[in-house]
Image 1: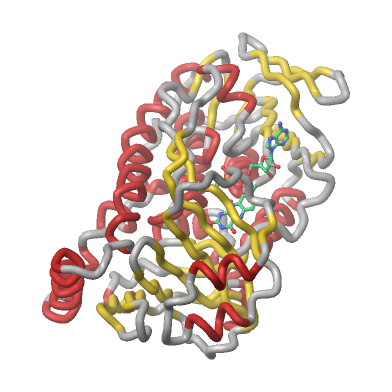
Image 2: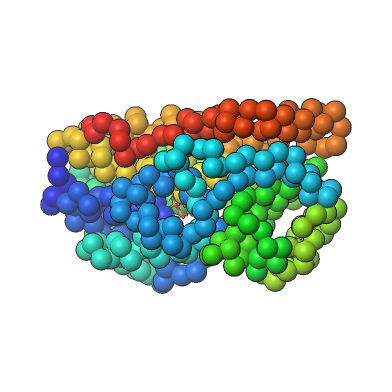
Length: 393
Ligand SMILES: Cc1cc2nc3c(=O)[nH]c(=O)nc-3n(C[C@H](O)[C@H](O)[C@H](O)COP(=O)(O)OP(=O)(O)OC[C@H]3O[C@@H](n4cnc5c(N)ncnc54)[C@H](O)[C@@H]3O)c2cc1C
């Protein structure tokens, strides 16, 4: 069924909101996107677009553009913190041919999606902050300037601190994980090729990969610690704190950290996946429904899958409510599994020196060397999934 004539308001112009705008308008809906920021600026750093998320980009006809702006990942290299020695290497070239992996700057992906959304007739309103959402037969939005508007359907793609999630299920109570992460973008001082490196040390690890033609490196460095840090993407920190936390790391790490001039720090919080995503002609999507820890690099990929699934489920049902119920049914268990897997990954990188660490590293090394394809096949459920080919309805 076409969504022709359906008047849809999307809250949030992140990757989830913009992808939903493209998917829904592509099926005929009249889409208005409300973003609180005054401009879709250069915010954020690197994102990994894995094969499952890439399928949505491909279905939207944007894969060539993404490939031009991103770097295709060729390997994952797990390294010991002391000297950067390789513990295990997964060759992404062994993935099936239709499973490609890209590293891209968040700002470049936002720019690509926003340009396309505008070109396809989506009304993108900036500086439009939603203060309240009232789900209902015809849901109502109260804007920060007190004006109101209604729509046939409201999509909450408004991220971690979602207004729509609060309206549907009440305020969430996230738990501090005892971990913080820094992120920075630096010149590619080590000449790193198209691979993700994970430098694993006791109680901390550092992930780095190239962006923008390999000219720059994206760094995310996570550390276990007691002190709380804000759950925000825009909290600046002193680079000296990052260098001090990773002072015992060798290999290429000191050179990389020496090049950091500007760094953001964010507290890592565990959230429950929202127990209800839909109601009163409203739907949650992306981080608003299922914020995740970064240890599986799936935040943006899940949001892309959600966007496609929502439009397909709505198009597959005559009644909006039935389409929304099908969307929640299709997405919730998969997102729960992804979020739980990401949460479970942290400890694997952070083992202290000792027998457990030795055993884990030996298993990793042997697994990757003796059965490289099997080592990658463990991700089939994640990367092999194609939301664009599921039967509609
Ligand atoms: C500033 C920023 C930087 C980020 N940087 C990184 C990064 O470097 N690496 C990484 O892996 N992930 C990053 N992320 C997270 C990543 O983009 C998301 O996990 C993933 O893409 C899912 O996106 P989303 O669209 O669901 O949510 P988000 O990306 O959080 O987007 C939500 C959007 O909604 C807008 N919004 C929120 N409340 C309102 C409101 N009341 N009214 C109107 N608009 C509203 C926000 O301004 C934001 O643009 C960042 C997110 C943000 C917001």
